[in-house]
Image (tube, rainbow, N blue to C red; front, side, top):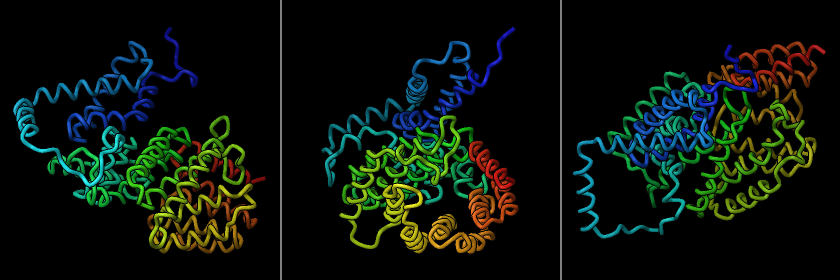
Length: 425
């Protein structure tokens, strides 16, 4: 009888799904450089996944599955290009153009990372101004972040069909407008920068607290986002918000090791062992925040404010020593700079720590009718925590149960149900 897979021995299909989820951004980016069409690149990456599903269960998972997927997709991309009827004619024309056209003159010298980083090219391509801001972010999260439409919809707090339509239309627009697969220079780069920063931040957040799945963290996404932010800082040294975002991600990444226990169970901020926070990343965050301050010419941007909030946490040796009043003030500034129900929810938490849970609960209760937070599990989670601190345990338990019902990440759901049980004791 054939042995059945156990929890310690996942099926080949599960392994393939996990590998593809981690490697698909690099595969799509690498193939897009060949075919110059992100929609086709995604299809070829999916073809490589199908090939893996056919071969790996039979032949075994290769030693370097990411390289296998990349090689398979690239081979199919080259075959596709060769099959195009106009390939030879275009290649000849390009050769003639190169012989008769002087080299392009740019405002700044090309940077090695600028030329060779396919992931960075993919980010700037999918953040082209021919797309709406919402479409840019949704498409980049899909291609670079490897998120499903359902996960993106949850991150946006909008219906799933809306995200699906945005992604389809965005890919079609990039193809019909013949958008170049490149990192632009000068004003073109600056025009796309805001969307690029937003996308990098959202990708990091999905890695830092996965929307769905069995694990709280997706470290690969955090690493990709942090690397892209660092590359961008080197490319754009005079942009304060680039340095601010890099600082924010350095600070956030510094806590990763302390955010889960040995078995993957989430550890709340107040319970984290701060000795496990990465001091090297904190130091990098402080330096990046200093560069942001040094290059700023006006009021701090939203990433500078968030980085300053993260710095307050890293400067505190314990949860009790955290400067919550400063954090609440910074969240107030952030709410005026970039209004958002989620920012208001975070401000409520800070206010509850600075002025007491009753004050925080007033702010949270004002958000309960906010449509964007209707299915947002952290709203009842925060409300449950405040009620528990006020001794209203029966109400707190109801909120934790409701939050667990809305959570799609299994680790978060288990944590919330555990907190609900604690209300009974």
